[in-house]
Image 1 (cartoon, helix red, strand yellow):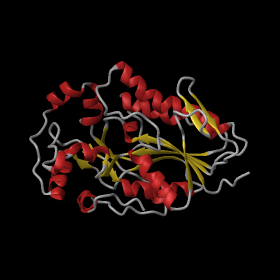
Image 2 (cartoon, one colour; image 1 turned 90 degrees about the horizontal axis):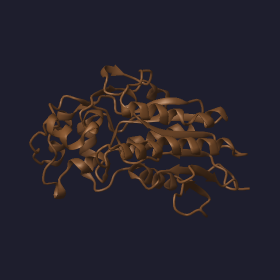
Image 3 (cartoon, one colour; image 1 turned 90 degrees about the vertical axis):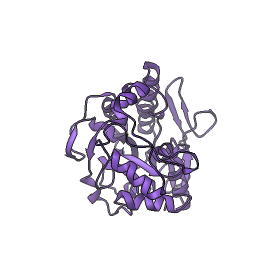
Image 4 (spheres, helix red, strand yellow; image 1 turned 180 degrees about the vertical axis):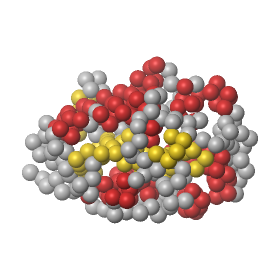
Length: 307
């Protein structure tokens, strides 16, 4: 039987974060496997109709990194869209955790994505990993998403809940949506622009995930964010400086709500003063702790640094 030393399974490997992480881990010499949703003959397969995960017992895994989930910003939150968002995270994670628990040779760790949406739109003062969950859809989703790993935890697998802030890179994620074609201008502030937005660069995120793979005593939640969140207005201004481009006029809160419905208040206008107390437990530091420095580095090169 093959050794599990270098085998890592990634769900959501075709996404913005997953593809960059898969590339970085492969560069480090790991054998990266994906959870396939199309080919039933794949060694690692998710049957969305039956909500079951099949894992190849002949390919033992060192770790599983669970990043799967439908994009929350792809359209208004109709009841059908909310169900898709929920099932793609909670139900898949539950099926994955149950399958991992049944393996004769279990992975050492499950790193499972979550989000700062866990805390809801309630954090006026600085809130770390020990803060209480919010009460809106994204908070309920994050709580259920994390709880869906219970079977893996009960089976003795180390479980880490990675609560992502906005992940910054030029080629995808939120920044791609905020820059007009040909970098003609950047999107202006939304509402009054005073709501706080925790963030982290993609390259720093990947560094922290790599560290979480090897920290054998680390489990539970971690906020993957830079030290200080930026206001939405600061975000827009910093992008304009980095790109040397003008800002578009502000988008009023009322118009934002008209365009995006429930998602406007839960995601686009929400303010979250989220920090991390637990990052100090990792022997890793952020290369880009300030927003101006992060954006300058991101837009200085055509592709992100994923080392």
